Length: 80
Picture 1 (cartoon, helix red, strand yellow):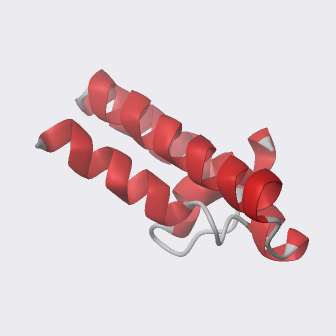
Picture 2 (picture 1 turned 90 degrees about the vertical axis):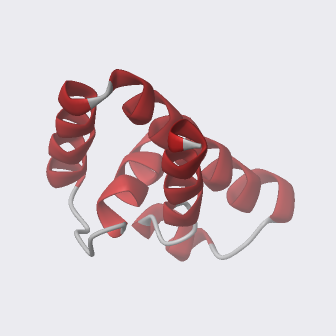
């Protein structure tokens, strides 16, 4: 689940690599640590909900396609 949540952060700008997602998270943390925490928390929560509670497509979850909206909502919650 951690790998899928990490990929979710990269899917925000259409990158499907764990390393690029970590770079995005690190750059968010440099700019605003609160923003990075909320984005990571949103991605983890959305991925967990899609995978465990709702039981959506496993391949979509592992590609990070079901958690990027949570990352965006986390960023919005940090700002507002």
